[in-house]
Amino acid sequence: MKSLLEIIKKYEGCHKKMADGRLMAYKCPAGVWTIGWGSTDLDIREGTVWTQEEADKRLEHDAQLAVNSALRLSPILKGKELKLAAIADFIYNCGAGAYQSSTLKKRVDAGDWVSAVSEIKRWNKAGGKVLAGLTARREDEAKLLQK
Image (cartoon, rainbow, N blue to C red; front, side):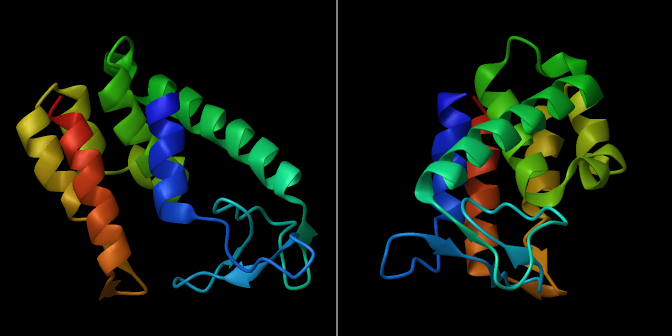
C-alpha cells in the first residue's frame, strides 16, 4: 500500500489550502468537484471544506477501496505488489467502471504486461485533451507494471 499512497500523493496533491490550513473543494481539469487527495464523491461540491486529517483518512479509505476493486476485478494481481499499486492507482484516478470495461483489464488478466504497459499509457486525457500530469502518472504506473 506504501507504493500506492506515494503515487496518489505525488499526482493528486492537496490543493486549495486556506489560510487556516483547511482544504477547499475545487474543480479538477475534468470539471469534477474534488477535495483533499483527489476525492470526488457526490457529497463533494462547491463550498466543501475538510481538515488535513479528514483528507488523509479519506485517502487511506479510498486507496483501500481501489486495492479491493483491483483484486476483485483482476485476481491475477494478488501477490504482485507493484503491479497491484499501478492498477489500484489507475482505479483511484479513473474509477473501477473505467477499468472494468477497458482493454487494459483484458491485458492485465491475460498476464500480458507488455501490452498492459501500452494500454495504460493511452489513458492520459481529460475532457478530450492530453494532460501532462496524466501522461506522467500513466508513465509511473507503466513502470510499476514492468516490475
